[in-house]
Image (tube, rainbow, N blue to C red):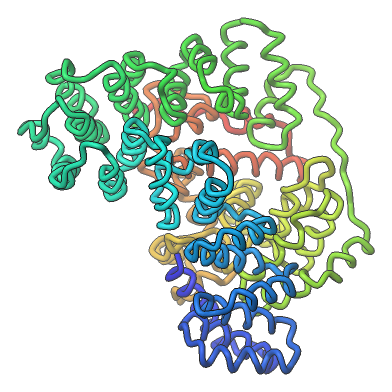
Amino acid sequence: MRQLFVSLFFIFYFAILTANVSYAAGDINVLKAREAYDKENATALAELANQLKAEKHILAPYAQYWLMMLQLDAMDNERIEAFLAQYEDYGFAQRLRDAYLRKLGKQQNWAQFNQEFSRYQSIDNTAVECLAAEAKELEQSNSHLLAAKYLWLSEHDQPSDCDALFDKMQAAGVIDEEAVWQRFRMASAKNKISLAKAILKRSNDYQTKQQSMLGSAYQSPENFLKKSLTSFKTRFGREASLYALIQLAKKDTWQAVAAFKKIESQFNADEKSYFYAMAGMHSAKRHEPEAQTLFEKSNVLTMNDEQVSWYARAALRVSDWTQLLAIINQMKPELAEEARWRYWKARALIALKKDNKQAVDLLVNLGVERHYYGWLAQGELKKYTPPTLLEYKPTEKEIAYVASLDGVKRAKVLLDLDLRWEGKLEWKNVIKSFDDKQLLAAAYFANQQSWYDLAINTADDTRGAHDFSVRYLMPYKTLMTKAAQQQAIDGTWVHGIARQESRFMHYAKSHAGAAGVMQLMPTTARWAAKKAGVNGYKGSMIHDLGTNITIGTYYLAHTLEVMNGNKIMATAGYNAGPGRAKRWLAPQPLEGAIYAETIPFDETRVYVQRVMANMYMYKKQTGEARLTLKQLMGNTPAKP
């Protein structure tokens, strides 16, 4: 992550230097200070920090913060605390406190840790959570170790700061043998083989040779199972075999099932249930009709959220409403209460003509929520009048107040210098306690500054008062509408794509390398530029607003043509590739919402749903909303 951030910083820094942008000497020193920090050049950074302090530059504390982060381990705790007290309201304060708490944990300075932790505003840092749990255990009792068990039961590789806590939890019996194997399954299910090997070491029956044996199950599951490399009498032997079987199931359902049948008698009921749940999940993601049969051999009550969700999707895919309703009714309450499953439960009740009042209540309650499933729910209700929302337009005075805040002033300088990570941190710090009216004033200010991503995201946070014109901005409406008309595609669809892809920020760049407002991959951009007749196209032009929109709308039109005019498939194809979008078709026509719900890639599923919701809201904004969201999504054809 740090390497990625450094590389992105240099891209921005290089762009600043080569664009001949005029900056004051102090601003240049800020950029130099950031560069010195990235290069871990404490000597140069210290000199620049002193210069900025002498100049009383608004970002001088940032240079001091960067220097402190480089020298934190060697620095006196009193100096760190004094700095935190002085700059408590800065965006970096919690990041520094986060690092300081980890330092105190390493020092086993629990008294000071607890004092500093009382000022900590969580930024979802597992290392600090582990240290806090360790501090509580020392201060109070082992009951706090049990409360921290969720930190162990994670599919993620936890930081080394958690090791001491996990040792204490294991010594106290909180991490027992069953908990070891529970986490082993969580890691192996996500194919995190290194983590699975590390977890093995906490088993009571751990042997060094198990490392290479598990590696064999990972490298060649067929050979591992054929050679019977381990004994089924041990827990490791059965779990390693299950891992090999599930590796097979990821590629070929029936090869895995056939291999399992040969040794099924060696497993207990829980292990059999686990195999069938995993095999069913992978089968369901491939949209195989056998998925439901496999799930039926498992116990719904022992399935994790992902497994039971795919069980429900397998039933939904074939419109088995009876089975879908039964599955949702057996979900854990927190999962069943998700908007997704409340909506599909209502749909199942309607399809089965059961308990119409419950279905209507579910839909009415969903209908007041401002998201994809809420808008789908509204379309299901006959003679439904959507709730009147409190619309609010901030006054010039309210917007000016936001602009006057010190944190916003710092954010503006940071964003003007393309130090976007720090700028966004300042912005989030400022608005974290805002009410709806203040959020909308902040969103208006951000829009005035052309910070379209911050404007949209800030307006998205309101709960009681709304302004959908800023939540669904159209900053390049003329340009995008014209480009859409030239390609004979729907301009609101183009806006829906751009809002989801980049929030209309022309310099946006994804981890995968997609760039610009329309988030085009370099190879796709070159191909589309040639086809669209963009003369003299160069890779650097991908961030040019007009060029990006021109070639992006061309590629959208091309994808739509490949999908025979089906927008929901074209949207999926734009994100995951046209070939995949076609593979996800069913043997029978599907309702668009069902096609979207059963997309096997989490990212693409959410992407398609949000783009279609965006398009629906843009149509309402432009006065084109004659269809419900469900109607707008239409149907997908049967697979040829």
